[in-house]
Length: 517
Image (cartoon, rainbow, N blue to C red; front, side, top):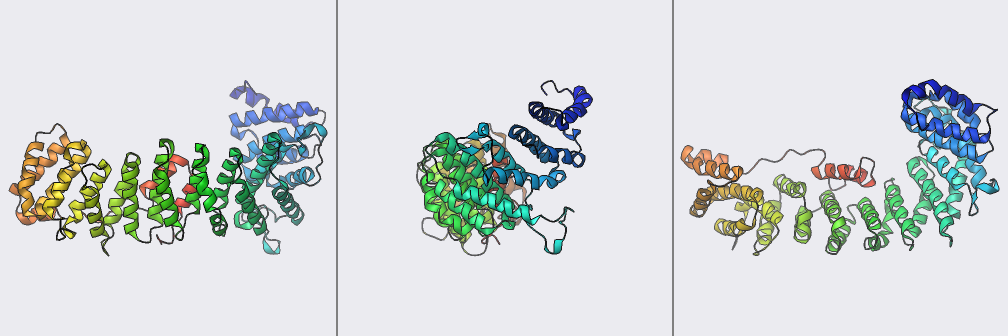
């Protein structure tokens, strides 16, 4: 197992399998052989033919020695990761062992851990069952499942339901930390199994799991609270669970202020998952209010998730614009480019109503103070360059005033922001004759800029009026066309990169909300 070179594996793996299944091997040898074969399979995944090897595993699962069973389950879980369907016939054996441990408490004294029968084995058994989400769904008229497996044996389905139900109802917080940890490890694997079953599982088990998790997310023990929040986020994805999760919203908001950052992260994930059109405004407003107090380690993640929720569940896009502006004012350094780019895309792609005028007016007011965050200047520059004409007739918002307010921030901005401002100035000069004398000196100075982008833009905008007739210039500087509406926003892609494909928040973000539909 420890040397495990490819040549050695190919020469000896058959011998290891033979020792594992041989009746003459002692329990200790079989334990070692199972763990050795697991290591070999991890090194060379196609070493064992699943369908041929499954009957031998079935024989091992009938061994009465719990040490052999524990090692066999480690091997079986390693094999099932690669080809789970080859081992589906072993479910009844696994359920039988679970029944003996959970229902009958049949366990040798040396494998009792604080009066809990072999918790490590129970966890491995529950993990194996999670490979088969349709294990307890029965097809009518004895029909076969889509993958060709035989219909479920009702006896083991009933026993499995009883096992999971007993784990849910009899697990409680214990005075002994060791016992509590072992019992809760089993409990959370049972809840993960319920999540895996989804809609095919009994509804009373889902409701029981939710009720229990509601209790655990309010206990003082941080480890149990962490696992409760994480598991509830998974359970919340199941259809019909949303209303039960919402009942715990106040408790989850309290966990957002926990001293442990890992608990705060799980609370943030759960709030993200439980959000819908009905409670979105309240959750987003609570998160924005908490952002003021949040430490730097979690701010970037909070800003990203607030931005996704505000867009996803906005019934009024003006509220969305206001929310992003709040994010910029509170934590502008953590508002990445994709977030403010998304604001620009949404405002540009919604000409109907007064969103564009509202965004232009709101952003102009936002950048009016002497000091504001540079990200606010970028958004304001782009939006005013495109839609500033919609508010030019309002008092204090003329084209000249728009230029004056934006240019006030010029000296505090970096090259990227100045490049955006140069394009905005060109558009303002095109629309308002009174802006041309103000813009010309800026372009003249910028022609000698050390930044190539600013230099090129200034030189081209200056030469444009001399090179083309006024109608052509008008066409060149008119507002941008709508952006292509991608199926997945850049923010969702960013979330996927951060948290991985199977994350509860990524799954939630991928589902279209009622507002989006």
